Figure (tube, rainbow, N blue to C red):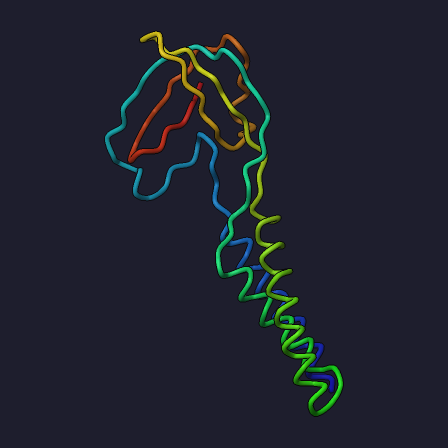
Length: 155
């Protein structure tokens, strides 16, 4: 019986590490491996407005799967015989739903919508994760770099 809490704790820690490893960085200072050394298009502009936004978290099968495993293991320790089977199934379903919600919550981030009047006269809005190294203000001159279909605004 002592083995059950240890197994449950191990499963919970593993799933938490898995979920936090899935979080990606969407700010203007972080590049993916594919973007490194790729030619970028650069445009210049002036910030017209800034608006705080919420960037929703990831919704991959990993959170639900990890939650299902943890919930199933937790449920299997309840009751005996048929009751244990039912508790395992219910624990797995509830754990899967909770795991998906936890993954979305862990990977959710604070963002900023940056509206820029580009030097060519066009007006565009860009959303990216808040980056403490990039403190934008209305009127700032910025660069908009685009690589592999993704754009970012930097000072």
